[in-house]
Length: 552
Image 1 (cartoon, rainbow, N blue to C red):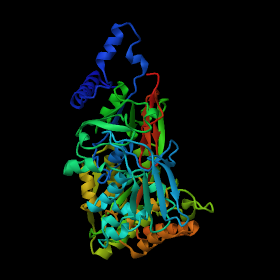
Image 2 (image 1 turned 135 degrees about the vertical axis):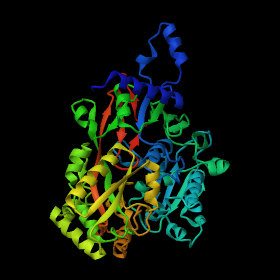
Image 3 (image 1 turned 45 degrees about the vertical axis):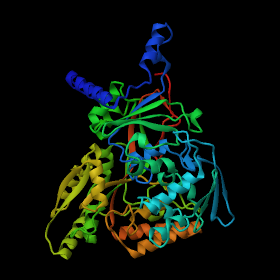
Image 4 (image 1 turned 60 degrees about the horizontal axis):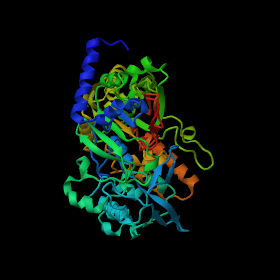
């Protein structure tokens, strides 16, 4: 990398400030290392201390499993908490907090026997902690109540509608080690739902002792997973340490993980190049520079990048204008040139990585692409403008203050204004959390959005756009679509269920409800001494419990 000496010094100064502010030393004891050196033994540095240094481009939003609704917080929680099921190294659901799972013949009663485990404060993890946590989501109007409905937990729907009390949720602690979960209908995807943070337990005594402060600071949470958060300097970074009380702590090799919040990619790259961090995800600006590096790789994800349209907007409430915008830009150029990180263009919602039907049908082979030409887009725009009685429209696109999001917004503006005379695009760049707030409030025209699914089943993507759904965030509503989604969730014949989901996607694109962009991948540079770093295609994106540092 050709960088002026002054720039390197500036970046190193920045990193020094980060270390000072976060009090992250990168090792647990400097004095012990000095003693070893003074005694003539092998220097500690050659022993590959089990410390990993990482970067995130934004802060943790919350450490409350009931409130977390962003990928960063969910990644943190999935490495510090553990539910009944977890993901193995091949991204398959396996028993985790439970050691046994028994299912009744009708598929409605699920009995879980818990492992012997402790909270990070020494309290035993009990079935009562699960029952309390799940019911708390409804008692305090948690963000993820809908996940219990999707998982078909008995009475979840009625409780969400205010027809029943949270006490009537289908979860009961039979004793300290036995949790009984009752469903309204059989749910073959139940283990996949149980991977997600709202199904984690929380320590009732500790939660109640913290009151409204629970989850706001590292010491205002107790953990039952492989790691604990011991430091959290807001907007600067946080530190994980190995959880000595975790039942599986013998297979956890890392002692410490330091995570630094770095928004500028150039700073992140310099920290990697100078050996201060061990792994960085890079954008297109650096791919060409590193793609021949043996430490460069591409990790495919189930992430979907798409445009949300505000269906309340005077212009975007028009189907023809939405369709024109979707057809009018080069998505292959977006993936190959602008992102340049292994992502692929999409002309659909359900990605190519979705599992096939029981008979072997592939979702994308059956439904194909939903696309059109630039000429089609121009005709559609003209028709839409006539229908709303205008000859031109100005729209704003909402982007996060991250490199890729900014680049997408600029490329989109250039393409749309070039290919669709009559449309003017303004760019609004907001901090990550503010962008989320505006999107949730549907206070935008067009929003650059990403979605990391709970699992890769097609329903995980399709259910986003049900009327009133938490991830709808654009006020799209079609009763036909809603009916198909509900049928797909209750259909026990898996082949019929697949056909229903295929039809639902067609309805979504007949409405031109969204503007698909790309299926995600990330380009990564990672130091060769980092072994066992596991990335998953869906949430959580990362598991740290198998990582070791070897040969540093």
